[in-house]
Image (cartoon, rainbow, N blue to C red; front, side, top):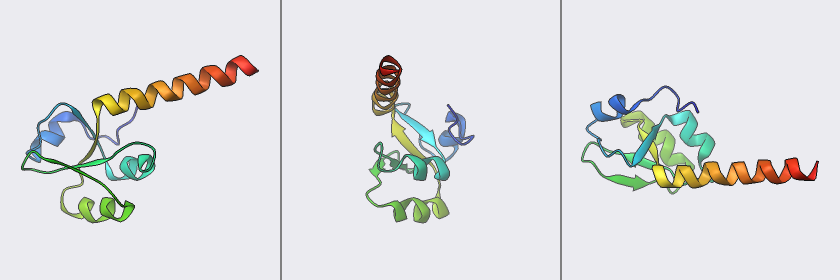
Length: 91
């Protein structure tokens, strides 16, 4: 899956180093918003949940490193796989 070309070393350059947050760029954060929890990754090592879509645009001007929790991402992918299986079984 494409995470908008942000990789873990890039996230680390911002000062954010927790491996439990998978980094995503602004475009991917906007795409996923409302479907999975998006977090802002800040240099202090804290994650701040994004509550409104506008926060993505504003934070992108400052840092632009967003993320999804690894465990949330796994559940998100599993939901998609279950939906695929169900639609295939009906066909």
